[in-house]
Amino acid sequence: MNPCARSVRFTRGGLRTYLRFQEKMGLLIDAKLVSKRIERLSRIGRTPEGGVTRPGFSPKEEQAKALVRRWMAEAGLETRVDAALNLIGTRLGRDKKAPVIMTGSHLDSVPNGGKFDGVLGVLGAIEAMRSVNAAKIETQRTIEVIVFTAEEPNPFGVSTFGSRALSGSLPQGALERADPRGRTLDEILSRRGGKPEDIASARTDSSGVAAFVELHIEQGPVLDSRKIPIGIVSHLCGINRLHIDVRGRADHAGTTSMDLRRDALVAASEVILAIEGICRSKGEGVVGTVGKMNLTPNQVNVVPGHIALEVDLRALDHEIFDKIKREILEACKATAQRRGLEISLTQTSAEPPIELPESLSHMIAKVCETLGVSYLMMPSGAGHDANRMAKITRTAVIFVSSHQGLSHCPQEWTDERDIETGVRVLCETLVRLANEDG
Image 1 (cartoon, rainbow, N blue to C red):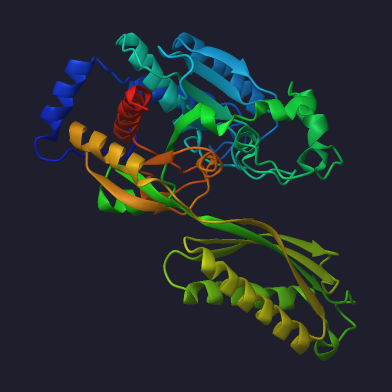
Image 2 (cartoon, helix red, strand yellow):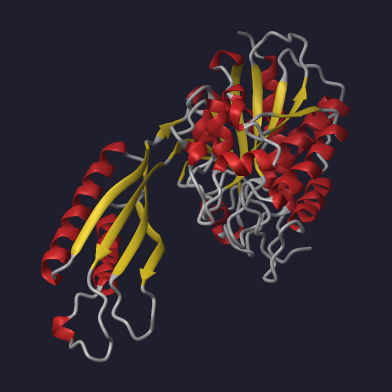
C-alpha cells in the first residue's frame, strides 16, 4: 500500500447507505482495475524520476490511446477516432436521437508529470461504463467517453486542442502553426492519422450534447488538507497569458562596468518580482507565474541582451485581469526607463472565468448525499477540457483528492479509495443525466 493511502471518508450512516445503494444498483466499481490501468499507462513515457513525459501529438500519446481504445472495447463501448484524433467510446441509449451525455479527459502529460492527471478522468469513465454494462442498466440517452487530444501546452501553442476542435473553438490559423523544428500542426496531425483537411467534422453541434462531466484530480491541497473525498467545482478560473520582451544590450562581461550595462536579465528579474507583488496584492484566487524564459545570447561571459518571458495569470474575477495587466505594464515601463532599455508586453491569450451551472452541481451533491460521501463546493485554479466544453453544453467537474496537492510532478498521487469514490460519484451522475427528462 502506498504510504499516502487512507480510507474513504463516509458521513455518519453513509457506509450503510453506500452498501444498500451498491446492492440495489449492482454497480460494482473495480478501483483495483482502474489503479492497475493507471500504472500500466504510466509506463508509456515513464521518466527515470518515476514521472511521465507523454506530449500531445506524440507517438507516445497515440500509443496510450491505442491501449485505451482496447479497454473501451472490452468495456462494451463502440469506438471511433475523429479528424482531430479524439478517441470516442460510445454506449448507446434507447433514444438514438436524443442529445448525448459526454465524459472524459486526456492522456497527454507535461514533461516529467504525474500518472493521474487526465488519465483518471478517462479510465474512471471507462470503468463507470463497464460497471453500468455489467449491471445491465439501460439509459435513455447515449453516453460517450472521450479521450481529448493534446490538453496540455505543446510546441504548437494550442493547448486543449481536441476539446477546442470538438467545441468549434480552434483559433484561426491553428493548423499552420509550427513547432521549433519547423513542422506544422497540419503536418503532424496527418502523420498521426488525423484529418486536418476535414477538421471541421470534429465539431459537435451544441444541440446534440445534453451535458459534459469531467472527473479529475484536484491538483491542489484543499481536499487533502480538509480530509474531504469529493470536490464539486463551482467555477473554472480564467487564464490570461502574456509575452514580455526585454531588450537590453549584449556586452562583454569583463570589460563593461556595472554602471554602463543594459542587462536584460536583471531588468527581467525586476519585472518578475513586480508580477509576484502585483498578484499577491489582489488577494486569494489570483495567481501569476513566469514559467518560461528564453535568454540571449545565454553565454557565461556575455551580459544578457534579450529576455523573452511567458506569463500565466489566473483569476476567478474577469474584471481583475485588466487591473493586473495595467499594473504589470506600468512596472515594465518604469523598469525600462530606469535601466535604459526596451520592454514590450503582448497578450497572447485570454480565457474568461466560467461559472458552472448550479443544476449540475446540485445533482452531483445529491449523488454524494445518496452515497453518504462528504463533498465540498470549490473553484478550480487549473484549466481543463471542461473549459472548452462549457462553451457548448452544461458542464460539471468532479474533483478527487491529490495527496499534499502535488501535481504535474512524479510525486502526484491519489489513493485507490478516493479513486473508487470518485468513479462511483461519476457513474451515478452519468446514469442520472442519461435518464433525465428533456
